[in-house]
Image (cartoon, rainbow, N blue to C red; front, side, top):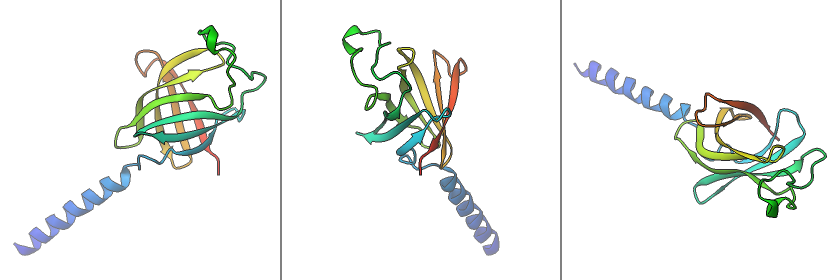
Length: 142
């Protein structure tokens, strides 16, 4: 009987340990990232338990936020512009309930970020349901 309890206890502990290892640290996305096209770099940071991302390099020929629907914002620089806003960690490997602003189109989309591994994240912008959207893979800059 005692060996059954010990086995059950070890099995339970192993299950808890593997679950803890499978979960991603909430701050794992903090750092610098480059997009798939390798024409822009971003810094993801944390502020008051939410996650944000700003453009730190690149943007192609576009230097200002000229496509912004708000005419008052069209003269702001793209470098330094916060395009990822208000993400909350789900406890596993996804940051959700955020938005992404696409300065190339001047549009804001719902967005979620999923960590694929420590050096790759999926950025999924969408309208309404996540099913209707586009995913881009960003790579960590080391």
